[in-house]
Image (cartoon, rainbow, N blue to C red; front, side):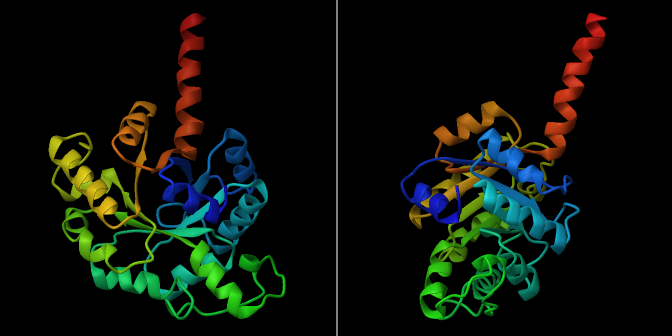
Length: 257
């Protein structure tokens, strides 16, 4: 899928599935994730080791492979938001969205006028380096760019209606690890109070006509939360795929020997 296809699927109430890449810098990872069947991939510039060059290479490969590259930016400033979009990202995952003012700044620098104030660099990766008709292109880019607000503190949950009232946000995305930690329950993403906060986010997203999303680490939880209303789900990450699978298999091999 690409950004517009994901947005269409979410509006139709379908579930879209993705994953993270944070440590594997080769552009080939995009083709591997696409071959696995993921709809999107988060390129992690917040906690991951990517710089602009490596993130751009992965984003361009992802566009060719047919999987939507969504960059998790390190912060909510003009350069952090605009540069990945100019470099071919289908959208952004913006961390720690806790206030209306923060959300307004996020939209200001990710949407072209008249919606926002994103600067125009026309012939870059985002336009595949082709000449464009500026007016129609800006409108189309605003429509297509996927904006995912990361809801990862109790304050974010409590101010969710204010945050989503800004408009142009496509997904309210729960980060269970940070959310549970902000509630004084680190490592307890299944604690009843955390679950209630997640459910409040699903309800709030529904009120505003957008999708709710979440990052999860096991298949059972993905299925359960999809049944409870999550539509934009990230499952696992490159480190887990590379370490846990072989560790499990090697343990079985050594036991067999």
